[in-house]
Amino acid sequence: MTASPPLAPQVLVIAASNGHNLRLAERFAAEARRRGQSAAVLDLTTLALPLFSPQAQAADHPAAVAALNGQLGAAPRWVICAPEYNGSIPPVLTSAIAWLSVQGDDFRELFNGRPIAIATHSGGGGHTVLAALRLQLAHLGAVVVGRQLVSNASAPAKDSSIEDLILRLIRLPAPCS
Image (spheres, rainbow, N blue to C red):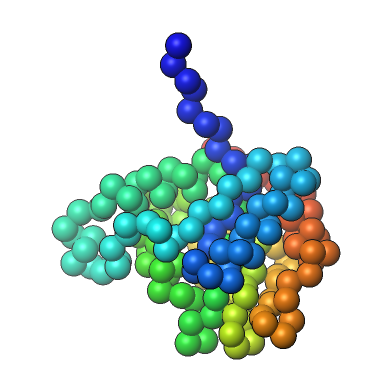
């Protein structure tokens, strides 16, 4: 008997670092599960994605991009946990989004109507990464949850804030396929 493939999670939590933001992502996934949602964590730092550039795009789209596109497309809701890098989005996330936006004829296809919550654990303030991420995701057509989570060493993420963000996220309608 052949095992059926695992179902895509209802909430995919994307970590754009393997430190504090990965731990924050795991907390979001645990809360989603507590709320009856299937959830998984995707650590972007473990993927073999080359840095996006016009030369890399012209050479070919790596298999890892197609796999990432499929994984993200199958999950109706996302949480993105990303640290602030030099006042903006970390390179691993920027490169992944660039690769994903060239996968078809419509660069917004993967993001259009997708409910996404955003959060950060940053050494600095963390507000500018979330502003930049919100702007980029809105440009791509995502429905970004109005509330966001900013945390750092002196102001750790509260369980109640994670719970509230997950509840807001799962109340949003999933995108039509």
